[in-house]
Image (cartoon, rainbow, N blue to C red; front, side, top):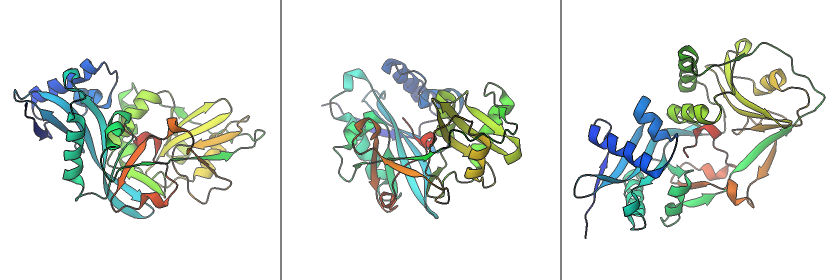
Length: 300
């Protein structure tokens, strides 16, 4: 029987980095976080875990992001599991579960929370004890369609421009918490990657608020994805500034402050397409809230 060895944090090993890139290409996956990171910006908080065969070749890899999760006013240590990659010839032989189990055992006594939004990983977390499919919630606010914005100047950022790119990345790393209820830190590269992949044309700088805002206005729905600022932003004031006439609803990409009026909480209990969070809540107590992890913090 072929034997496999666990290796991790191999960022300085050129051979293994090339093998990871080859594995990404073999999977036929375009624009993955790992591909972007290995080529351009290796995050110190990202730790690759892999199984290697007797020849020393990587056959299976899972990314682990070390980070902090804030629940209320308390900071907890957490790890988010990202992107399961495995060679075709090794699939369905138990290696996926074997690798994930070893990762969970390694971090189970040193963090307060382990979770994943990755569907390929979640297929195997179902088989590991203590992980549960967690219901997430949507936070929305009805909006008066006749109401007009205050019309202040905003600047659309060009992320192909080095200055704008660096400014955004700095704001993400040094921002205040976007949600006072459930937020994350130490995962700036995930947030940056998600913006580049999904929202690169939806990033704006609001000079009067000294804030970078990611938002989408689509079919009378204003989606406030995230706000980044080194000082606390008044979200209600920001909405009055940005939301255009004709908007019927504001949708938040995070749990908004409880001081914001008329916020409605919608369940995803009966929508399995929206239930993607598997979580091992060791001591963080996340489950006491109606969970909505910031959209941009999700590795997928």
